[in-house]
Amino acid sequence: MLIVLTAIGVFAWIMGYLAIVVIPVAIALLLSALLAPAVARLVSWRVPRGLATALVLIGGLAVVGGVLTFVITEFSNGLPALSTQVSHSISQISHWLETGPLHLTQQQLRDFLNKLISSLGADQNAITTGALTTAVTVTEVLTGILLSLFTLIFFLYDGYRIWKFVVKIVPSGVRDRVDVAGRRGFASLVSYVRATAAVAVVDAVGIGTGLAIVGVPLFAPLAALVFLAAFIPIVGAVVAGTVAVLVALVANGFVQALIVLGIVIAVMQLESHVLQPLLLGRAVRLHPLAVVLSIATGVVVGGIAGGLLAVPLLAVLNSGIKSLLHDPPIEPTDVDALERSEAQPIGQTGNGQQRSEPGVADVTTDSDPEQA
Image: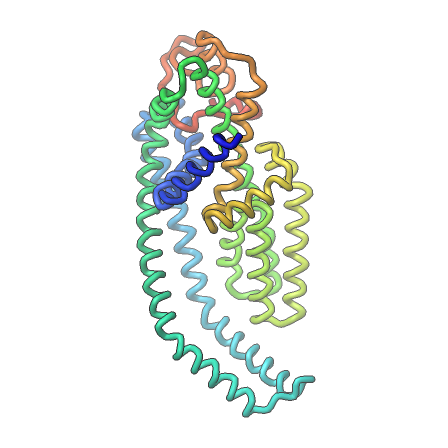
């Protein structure tokens, strides 16, 4: 046990040291789980795999670019009105500080603002250092995006051969079982990404519609924030909803903020009691406590990226380890039959036509066999 724990610790340290490479590759793996079914469908329509990969990538980038353009445009258009409302809210807060139970004077408020400005001036070096750190972080993020895109192309186009090459490092006696366990783990990852995307859409539409009805400014960017944050199960949508409540409090007042809070709570109840058990529970089969603990551990270890990748990693490990522990040993002659029943068929199809080799995510769950 000590040797195994030491090996795990060394492996975790190496992954942390190489985080600038590991995180983009992991994100590319998540994206491949989302996009590879579309590539497999195009290939089944006799589209060459290279062309299918290009079409799916171009379509995905077009959708992401369109959403970002819409969010940025809406944010730019709504920022002046939000600034006006924030200024009005600050005036109301100042008036309450003067006439409320605190009875602060104008001179005390001015002294407080002057101290705040002096503190900012005294911490100018720290602010400058933070700005330089931010510039370095932006450079690393851009590099990571390019690396993820480059890796995603090869995962979609040549993922099957990449997986076969990786499996070769496993001893030959258990290679077939590890191959099947890896395929099942990736199948659970595909199910997780699909279910999470569906939950994120419902959260974004529900909260965004509520914000639009209440009249909260920047409801479209806030809905987009909810959609992105929902990919961190349980925690992400709550954090994004809290941001929406704060914006409503500052821009619209206390009553509207309470209404937005009620909308967020209603959507979270729908997610917790209907969507999570029906979609995510069926896809990853993880206990909610395991999900919460994995997210907390991921955030402590890897920050936002760790929280994003913790649950899918746990889902893959859960499915793969169950396959290794509970399935009987697989004879080499049985691997093709198992792949035909649970994954993309390889070689000859039932009607004698030649099928192309599957990609990294051409593995489906038992509940969705038509994707094969």
